[in-house]
Amino acid sequence: MQLMVNQRRLGRTGWMVSEIGFGAWGIGGSSWGGPDDVASLAALNKAFDSGVTFVDTALIYGDGHSERLIAQILKDRKDKIYVATKIPPENMLWPARSGISLRKVFPSRYVKKCTEKSLRNLQRDTLDLQQFHVWNAEWIEDDDWRESVEWLKRTGKARFVGISVNDHQPESVISALNTGLIDCVQVIYNIFDPTPAAVLFPLCRSLDIGVIARVPFDEGGLTGTISPDTVFAPKDMRTRYFGGSRKQELWERIQAMRRDLGDQDSLTQTALRFCLSDTAVSTVIPGMRNAAHVEKNVSASAAGPLPAATLEILARHSWPRNFYNT
Image 1 (cartoon, helix red, strand yellow):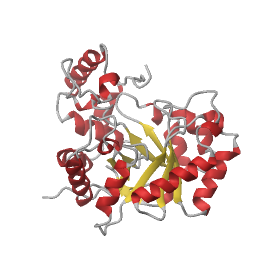
Image 2: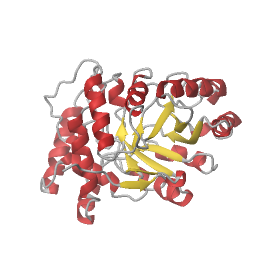
Image 3: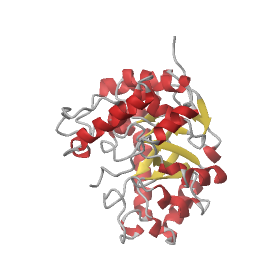
Image 4: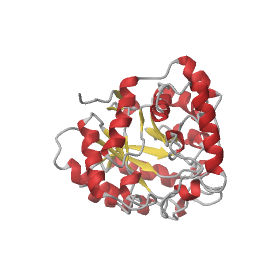
């Protein structure tokens, strides 16, 4: 029987989107050891056949390769799929650095240039959701970003605008959300880092801002498949992310979590259901590079949110830290 993913409202956009979305970084090929376009296209088709109606990509993913693959699939489909993409920082620094002005990261002429390029890649006249790929609270008083948002909406280049929050810095976006100009926020939220639930999520509820939860598996750490002996492909970003003694520490923490949980369900399912247990989350976007990933991830939707007792156990295993830049 074909599994179908449940739908949730994406904040003030009013869209009903799949609570399991398609994270399209991996199919771009960059940072993941090279693309397999046949498997990627099969994964996209499998996802959309299963009721996935939301896909998140970015111009930087394979220099537009991810966007072009999505366009290739969507041109032959009649179902409504919402596509979110992102403008990379012009200085190519992730995350945004303190003391660097907005004009060096998202100048208005660059925002326009990137938007036009994404429109061509996706073969669309209008983007469903355009997002800033990094953010810095220091930019809040700069009118240039406000003018860019207004241009995107006024010209019809994008229906809605969002921010992809810097790694593990959920509160850095608070001032931007309070301007009323931002419709959606994308943030790291998982068992190890549940911190967005403290301040960011209540604000999103009150402002009716859609929440896109990213990195639900901690780059694979929360799938339970990474051991101290795991070897990643040379171009796989996880070689650095889980470098040094990190694989050993991760493994020990995962074993402790499994013992406390009683090893009742697959850890992948538990990780996704954790994200979906907070009603502020509109959709969670695990990476899916083949059809098997899709089937496993979509099934978490049917399982529903986690019981309160399980959430209490998982709260003891939070491990907020930043492996991206350390």
